[in-house]
Image 1 (tube, rainbow, N blue to C red):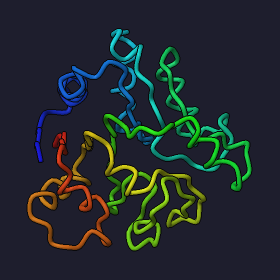
Image 2: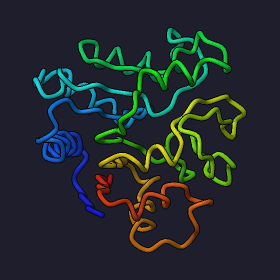
Image 3: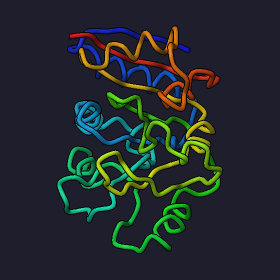
Image 4: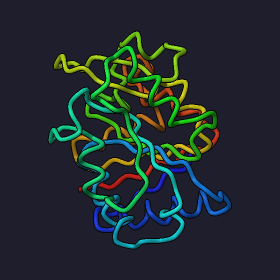
Length: 211
């Protein structure tokens, strides 16, 4: 595990540079993207820099709310407004639950992600995989899950995420400062704090900032 602690001002530049370093020898990178507010400035930076490396990359949503793409809560809708010129794929939420995962699996293809970018929720969840959820043990590649507030979600499975060549976790803020300590010295199990399932990944980077 590679821990990178930086200032809030340097968080996104450090993350941007670290992604380039990890994937420098990958000709056409496949990168998983998480929703939420924390990574949005990173997506803005990728769009602003217009680096050919990212212009030739394929980006895939790690999780999604089962809402229309035009809904302000849509991860894909939000991210494509921040990265309009990039090649970003996600679930077609206009499809029924019976077809939505099969359609996305076709887009994902047979190869694992080269890098999966994840955040961590204040309850310790990753993607749309929540504490104590049976979905954490699923062997499927893609899942329909339910958030604590009852909202239906779509998510890559833990097994699919762990197949990624590299995993990069990005978080910032006082309310998440405890996460860094838990990565180093866990006090609970991964069913209670799902991000702990990632600790033993062969190439895990954790980029964080304090406020």
